[in-house]
Length: 138
Image (spheres, rainbow, N blue to C red):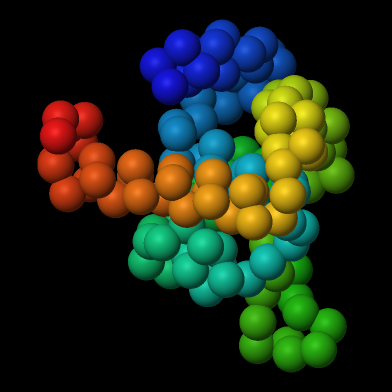
């Protein structure tokens, strides 16, 4: 696991993205929007397991940097849909596509049940880290 994380951290970050000074929490938000498509703040908050106000603050911050945009939902004008701007999409894709391709390659030979076991194992690992206060001890 440490080797894998270290390799992921060495993935080149495009200069335009690097200049934005993004934090890891922004990476998760951008990955969701890139791979799952536009979403509401509440949907993003649920998937990131954080409060909607946290996502709203991140979206506001990234909107001011012209990374994200909010638009009115065509079906419900009270809702706002968040998406990556057309101008930043190629940069974000260039940054994250290698990682996504590697996951697809690694998971492709697995059956649906095996992929589920893998994901469940990662989630269990995450819960164990949280329960131990971030320490990976038994």
